Amino acid sequence: MTSPHPTPILVPLRVDALPVSGSVRKGNLWHRWMPAYSKAERFQDPLDMTYEDFDAEKEGVYLHWRLPGALRRGRTDPGGTPDFPTVPNRWLIVRRSETPGTAHGWVVESDHVAEDGTSPYLRYGDDGKPQATFIGRHTELKNKDSWSEPRPDTALFLTALGAGLTAFSMYQPYNEDVFSFHDRLTGIDRTQDHTLSYLVLGWYSHLAGDPLTPPPGSEATLDQLLHGLGWYLQAGRVDG
Image (cartoon, rainbow, N blue to C red):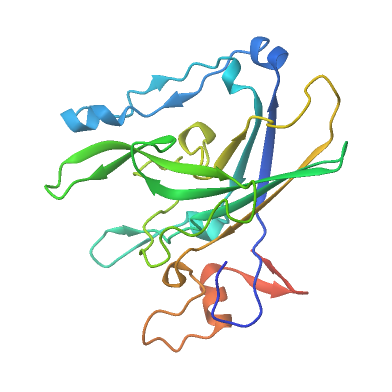
């Protein structure tokens, strides 16, 4: 996470991986539901969900990272409105194959909102009406010029609730290229056995969105900010 302090602080995450081969896909019954946000444009229930086909293009490895608890908990302001902290909106994913020793990388832009996004999302237009769209995308890192930060000065908005689903950050079909990634095993010879490992590292593209950045005019110390999140430093790491 971005911090104004000279020593970076790494907050641990839980990462789950689900390998899906042809036999696994065909040998199991998959229920992967997606919100139908286009119904919200007609003021219908978007949670009357649609079913996602799980065909051969869905094979590969599904990574899902669980946000720290402090970033999944909200507070209610004096007016009764729930307020959730912003979450990291950039994620580096590195896959390493032990046999042979090769590495592959991607960057996920969790808050990319456009028609070319990956996961269903809902935003509101200037007229206040709901608009169905998509969120999240990833870029493959083929060389040092493959990706650069596209919106360094844009204020952050993404929370663990996404467009308002309490399970948004936890249910992988809701959040592909937001809090999860589908590795289609590019460059992997599927006729051979492989041992794969993954690194997932997230950060904030804008300093003001980082919960360890004091609000303007605040004199809060790092210890106070950590305490407010239920985190504490121990032997050079954050627990909580």
